[in-house]
Length: 427
View 1 (cartoon, rainbow, N blue to C red):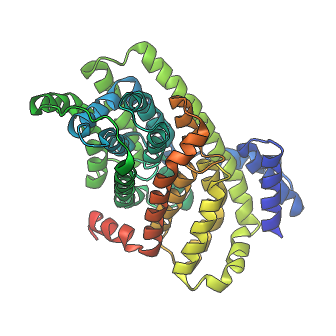
View 2 (view 1 turned 120 degrees about the vertical axis):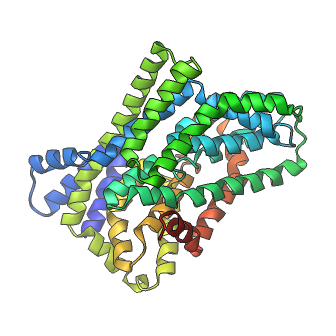
View 3 (view 1 turned 45 degrees about the vertical axis):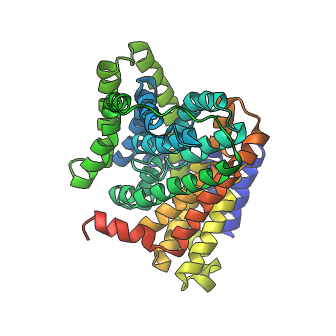
């Protein structure tokens, strides 16, 4: 009954237009009333305690790092490097988009910011080279969703803090799946390019490539510093986020000299607005999470899934289907904050590795950002590129299928995640 009340109150709140964060608080209040106790103090305390965690400081800093990278010219230098080495291939600008999205993902962890930056720079070039608009914009969106999977990932920070799982392990666990997502886009792009005849860019001379690489080297060093420092244990994920901001600021202001005080102020304002929305959602989820635990909702979920709890593979298949379906209707962050408090205890009871489940959870949620009608990344890229949504939906389809196939590979072969993780952790 408590599960039904939780779902009904949440759906009712969203259906009548209440923002998701307030709907999560509403769920908690509804459960309180059902259990015959209500305390405004409990609501306010859990709203604050939901974000009162050192690990969550990484979120605003990684968001700020992404904003500063775009304002300071780091993102453009990375794209310039990719164009210099791949632009002369048939469909070369598509491969440039994939390579750039993978590198940008390792810098900011924000799918929307990365996709928007790529679309703003590359879509005009692809139009000039006579690429199909729908395919081009669809590829930008599909490349952008590697950001929540490749470290440093804001999604992994949220998952790790709520599920009480090592964020460092989550970061390392996401490397191979993120690379596989990028490789699947390479295969899908090569497939769709067979019938396309875009203009091929001139091959860049090796001397020019060297100069472009030298100019882009300061930007390319950032993921090496962040991931390498985490691997060596030199700093925590939160400290890595601060270092990313400091490094991006230094390079943008003193190396590339594009980050002015005005641009820095704009980046701070945008990052503050985005961070405030995300952190309020997390705080609101703290209210519903506390009531979910108090009302024994996870135990109800376990009872509902009791018939398949002994079969880990079947349970993972059912949960993955659930995540993909929910992702079509809810944005990524609300999906995480609503379902994690219920599904993590289920996986724990079934003996499923929570780091592995975190990778599957985040990948499924990221794919949801490509699926209409919500599909935030899809909407943002279509808006930046000024391309009709119906064309973008058709164009993104082959890349969406490729990403879903990678997700199912990881669900059916857990070793794709666990074996590289054990190697990187030295186990």
